[in-house]
Length: 225
Image 1 (cartoon, rainbow, N blue to C red):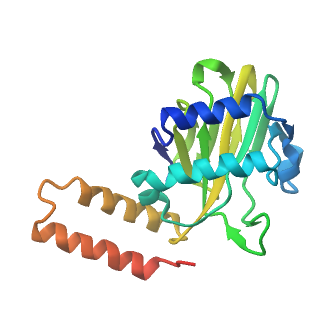
Image 2: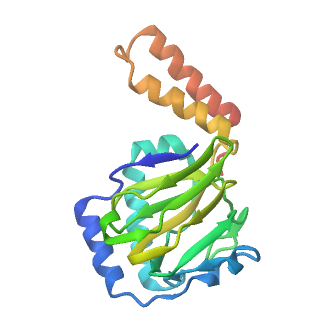
Image 3: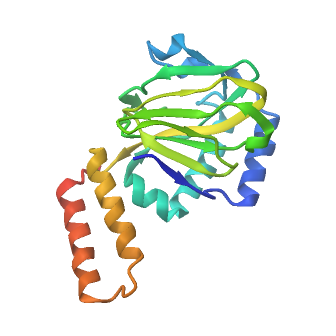
C-alpha cells in the first residue's frame, strides 16, 4: 500500500523544523546505508545520535500520534526514531530496498522494517527533481508532496530519489514495524477501517458487526510487541 497522508505537521511544527534544519550541521548520508545502498546513495544527513535529531524526531513522533490516517494505515508497533536528510543539486539516491532489520539507536532492540515513510519538509517549488519513485507490483509511482505531508509505502518496495537539479530537498524519513506484518492484510484492515468511519449510520447493527470484524482480524493477524 502506498498512501499520501496530508498535513501531518501543524504550521508551527513545520516552521520549527524548517528553522532548526536551516542552520543544522549536515554530514555524509552514507553512514546509515546498507551494503548495497551505500553504493548508490549521495545525500546529507543529520547525525542520528545527535541531540538535534533526537529533539526534532520527538516532534515528528508526537505529530504522528495525532494522525488517525497514519495510525490506521501503519498500525505501528514500533517507530524508528525519525532521521533527517537533505539533497542538494546533483544529489540522488539510486534504486534500493531498505534494510529488513535495524537496531534502534541507544538500545538493544531491533525493529523489522515493514513500512517506510518520508515526511516532506521542503515545498515542491523550492527544488527541481527529487521525486520519491517507488516500484511495486502495480507499476511505478512518483511522490513529491507539500511540506508537512507524508508518504507511506511498503519497505519491501524497490525505490529511489531522483536527482535534485535545483534548490534543496529536505525531509524526515523513518521506518515502522507494524502490528500486522503482511502488507495485503494491512491494506484490507485499512480499507475496512475507513469504510466503517465513512458509514452513514455508525451506530447501526451493520457498523457494529463490521467494527467487531475489524478488531477480531487485528487480533488474529496482529503481533503487538
